[in-house]
Image 1 (cartoon, rainbow, N blue to C red):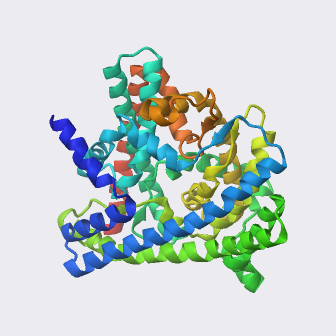
Image 2: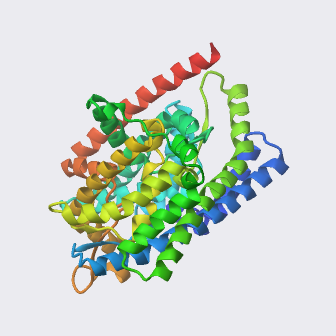
Length: 465
């Protein structure tokens, strides 16, 4: 009875979506941290307006890219059997699952425990995006049932996977936060986003490999330098227009539609950074209050970061330029990669989110970010292809009215976000060992937490010295 009440309360909190929930959370957090009521209220409202603006502009981006990709599919007769249905259905599946019903209280509890134990510096206020952790848990829950485990045991495994997924992502957010401030110009912010954070380990490995390749390790491409040298031709609006023309041409559209596409892409590259800047404006008072609170009450605990949706970072010119290059490239890769089943479609608009935490790893280098992005897309195609059946099973279990007949008379599907998430893929495959797999994931999470705590204390000591 109590559990049902808890689920109902958090369901009501989550239902209005990020644009309503985030302003309320920011306002309450500002008050708790000691910011004046007026500043906290303004901060919350500005954050809400920023999210509305970002959603409108990313909707414009997705609305333009979707038809272009559909036209390319028809023009070049692409025949992969699993269509990318996009992040919106994936999030709905996650929240509709048994795991999704409890993910918000579980996520808040995990964050609280990590803050108390000093194993994270991030206050993760982005509760809407807890769906990424629920998605992992729902997939593990379905896998456990498919392996013959009882309903209770399978559910417990799913909840454990969700919690441990969040622990790992929170640590990645902490470790990339300093670089996020330096290279993405987002001080006081971290990105505990289940999709974006998953590419950091791959980026780190590829970056090390590039350092070992003679000639390649000397290539440095700074977007700011390029824009300065090109003058007006390096402006985001012209970069967006050029890539819009290329994508429209590849889609085989008539000149009018091509130019409409070009203007829309130019508009997206201009407006997204402005909306992200507005969001940052709202967060500054809360971030300042957080640092003051820590210095007063928890000296020696290090910096505290406000954990936000990676949407705040997609306005970086590397994110947007690399993403527009990867749109046609990803379709080409999908066609030529042997064994790939996925046809990228609805989620091509989320490609900028891939790069937000790659930028701190590559230290803001455009060339390296693009190489990492190409490698990431290849990895995602194979992860997504291997998880098609499990995702469809999970979807049918969470929402049988919508997905029960998929794979029969309906289209087989996957998703770039999160059905191709490499961290989710790794956790699912470890979970094939049943409870031994959960113990392995727990051990990894504990070791990472201890290491992160050590790093936090070292950084705090340096700051105070």
